Image 1 (tube, rainbow, N blue to C red):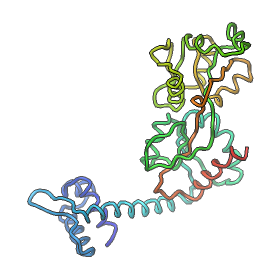
Image 2: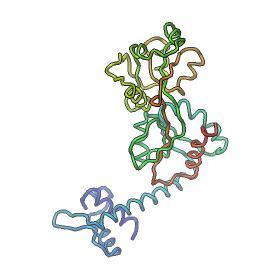
Image 3: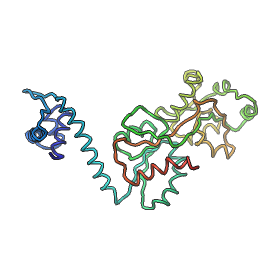
Image 4: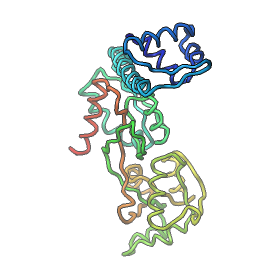
Length: 299
């Protein structure tokens, strides 16, 4: 048995066609057939039940298909790891908040410990990062939402809260002095929302749903995908917004914005470090994973 036989078998099963498998692998159809016959002979098992025009996969054939995928995946991961060993590159996919406010805190100290490591960092919304990690485009992702993708590991590393932000002007300054936050009045104001696919948008929707507030009830004045632009527009008086407390701290310190805490558990927001469950992470990617998982615990 060799890897070429496994690759021929996997490709034929995937496309349910010897012809398509030959085209995809750039070899002849008789070669595909030969590889699979050798595999069946070595395993002493019928993997495919053939007829004149097509074939069906047997029960043992499905078992071999699943095992072969795992074998090739481990092999390819090892080769990729060795290939990247000299460059020591960690490919990170990060959503908005981790990119702008978390990485600047954690990367400088990590680089002091691992001087030769180089990061390739791409920023997208959380949904896109999750899809890219699933497809193997990134070693590690940092996102603000969790999905039911059972091929990925989601490990929480930082807990934030969503807050409502307003300009630092009257009447909001007066509202801040009130004993009870007038949320009903605030949510009647024009609102600026994040784009769909972002973890911040999903967290805001979760809070509003738990509070019995629907998007249809809001007066939406703009939808944007950039946190800094949202903060600037709120400070300029275009509308209010629900945003990550981590993202707004600098503007609060500069007295450009006011924040109103949102009540209850629904306002909490978790950030996750994600990677493929079955994938062997490079040693320095594992080091970064462990470092980040402990960073805010130690803080």
